Image (cartoon, rainbow, N blue to C red; front, side, top):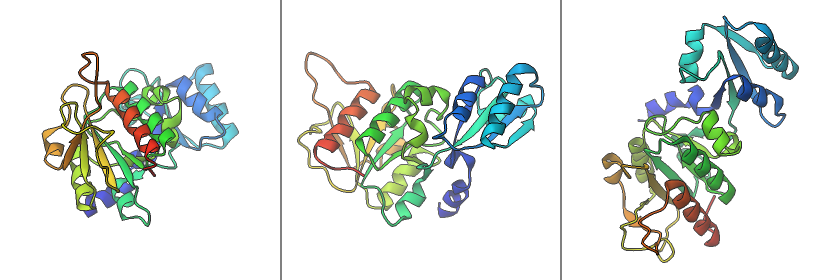
Length: 258
């Protein structure tokens, strides 16, 4: 596990948010608050659109690499909307989960995302968690939506600066958190105790399950407790992004965070 995480630490997916498409790339290059590591431009890209990107990169001193159109699609992870260009934007608070847990000040509060595949939900969760001062949001490399331009848009740009922690899968992350001494509390509408009355330990990790399947079996076996958000009016549950918002600001109210 440690060897695998050490290898993952040098992965670009643990260091950058990759945006693709002409407009998102130009927006990233035009934002002085963002550090762009590099631009990758398809070798077939020519004309005014390509020139605009090349000029914008030159103004920022950002290197531009040429690659085949197929390679750009592979790197972008999107076969339809890359438009032959991508940019790797430095995410200063993104790091491997293992590095965060082994650091001098491990996060006191962690959200573990398990099977959340809707970009809008991921973006809103990242925005809310950052605003609430949550210590880390585990966004696994597999089984959860990629942090792409749709997620960046849903987060209103906060995804670039969110405290994202990377792991291979949600199950790997759950195991690592438990080994590090974190109780895992699953947000579950059927739980007997509510978020507002439960005793919440520190440190603590909360599991937010997917939009349809909820918490996966592999993660569920590491869960140590469950908490619910009380519902009225015949409403069964909240959207996962709404539930995350309630959770995050209950932690703010209790002054649990960071």
